[in-house]
Image 1 (cartoon, rainbow, N blue to C red):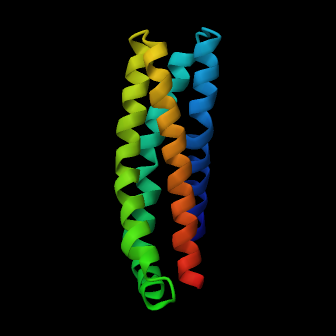
Image 2 (cartoon, one colour; image 1 turned 120 degrees about the horizontal axis):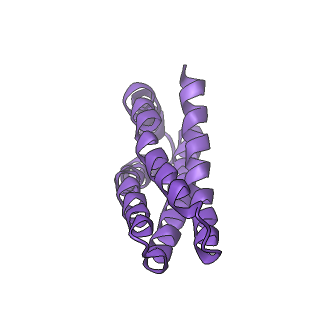
Image 3 (cartoon, rainbow, N blue to C red; image 1 turned 45 degrees about the vertical axis):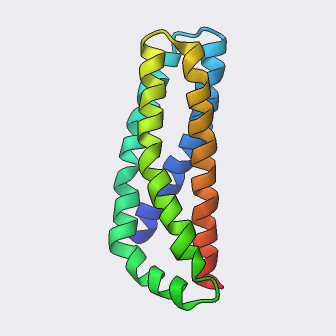
Length: 136
């Protein structure tokens, strides 16, 4: 089960990095697809909390012990704590960006989509650092 949840987490995370750029492109072209893709992206950002929560509550406690006992204890103290809080903020940012698109404020939403993509990418990098901390 862990692998399935982890794979879902990984795929949704990659989608949340890529989709904001797709939406920005659709907005630039004034495509009718911008609204449904924005809604789908907002939904995915909230759905992402499911595998994230399962990984954190079910599987992370054992990993946390390994990370804190390893040579990179800061990987939990700093990086994981940052990742958790940013991860909770991401669905709010994506939802705000989608609402702006639905209100035909595509230009105003473009910066929010960029913020969402950069934040999702940074969360992924932080996740990798934590994973490396478990092996260090």
